[in-house]
Image (cartoon, rainbow, N blue to C red; front, top):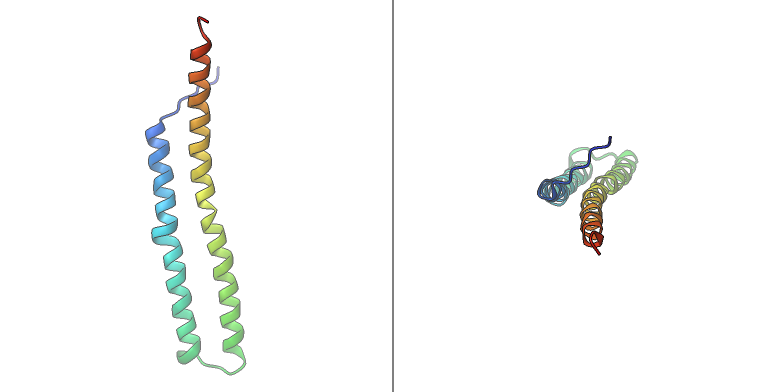
Length: 99
């Protein structure tokens, strides 16, 4: 027999932690690292031909990883959506009983 349990508070808390990590920690850190690399390649490791290519490559990497990190928000949204749907279903079924 399948077991179903929805702890809406736990779902909400976890979704909030995921979203906070994305917006408050992960994406800002990726941006700080991009700035550090940009500064390094503009002054501390300046090679006429190589530095611009390294900068472009790192920028592309940062863009890609930021997109992946932002997808964490999709998981948070899915968790909340699933919990909401299950709770709505339970409420709808209960409302039909005895009619």
